[in-house]
Image 1 (tube, rainbow, N blue to C red):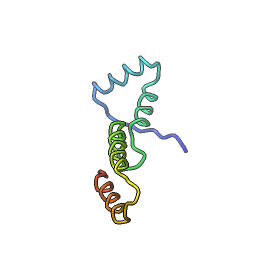
Image 2 (tube, one colour):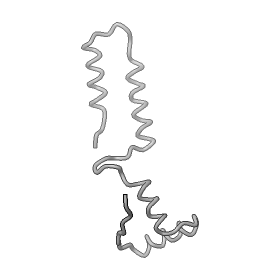
Image 3 (cartoon, one colour):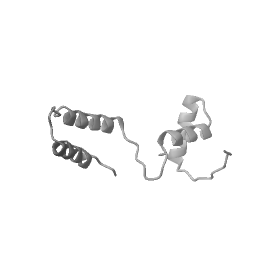
Image 4 (cartoon, helix red, strand yellow):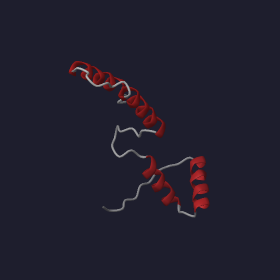
Length: 92
């Protein structure tokens, strides 16, 4: 894995923000930009980072469904609940 240079153009305002963070953290402009990209750039194109709130909401939906589970359900009832759970998911 090599290092590569990338030339970009930034607005005065954005460069000022980078400089402020650089000064406050005692890091170079390059370090600030690289760390920001690492923190916010998705691993794959089209992948969406899920927020903490979205994860909590999904967990709450799952718990709501699981709490309805009762022994003695038929396979059809189980399949229906699985379909309902999957339809509730958002993939965009």
